[in-house]
Image (cartoon, rainbow, N blue to C red):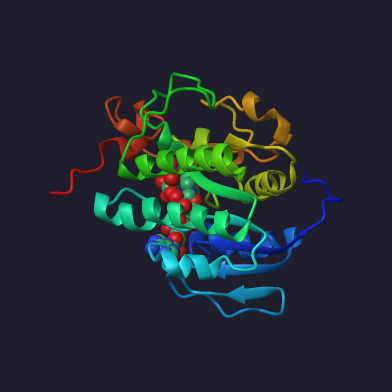
Length: 271
Ligand code: NAI
Ligand code: 15L
């Protein structure tokens, strides 16, 4: 569990607050800050009390992101396009969006960012391979490329401005694994929350890349390079095995059976 003696931040910004993970994290991030500022381009439920602020914002709008980050002490950047889409959509929300977040952090003196990166940064590795955070990236999509760019942005802003980031290469964080591939990539909401807490409060993270996976039986990722976070996942995909394995078998030549990134490896082209 996250160190309970950590002093909470005063104001924590959560982008992507209207999304699947954002709605879950809205409650779960509460111990980490006095005030959570919730932001998204999509509609959000109103603030539930003085511990919440709801601020709509389009990440592709630089001035709006600058205003959004005023008075913020740390950022959990979860907003953006979360699946494969035409490059122009990814460009606006993810590529320009992550630049705007880092620029706003620099100008407002914000020193810690948690970046919702993705396994699709390394999606073209085979499921037979085990890789760590130093493995050369093999993005499987424009989406994966945008997350790879976000990780480079994090390295640059640390080297140049000392802004620290933990990039969490999230596997599959949903209520339960939807298919056989996700038996390896599954990340429970509890483990995600714990990992975010550690990412917010562990000192001297520089730019750390960590794979966001639970304690699943068969895994493809080695987190030893992020050992300083002390992340010891408690959840597992195992309770869902019977249900998932009752699904029809996946063909041997299906990307879902070959690549770590699964179906993203066969998405597109869009024209
Ligand atoms: P989601 O698609 O449900 O949520 C993303 C949110 O970003 C949406 O509410 C959307 O309205 C918002 N958004 C999109 N474009 C925007 C823009 N231009 N300005 C402001 N907000 C914008 O995705 P989910 O599952 O909640 O994922 C959250 C983050 O975690 C995403 O960055 C995703 O790439 C990342 N991630 C999630 C994984 C998962 O298993 N859920 C796995 C790997 C990464
Ligand atoms: C992601 O990066 C996506 O945001 C999410 O919707 C899932 O597709 C997940 O990866 C996954 O690989 O299962």
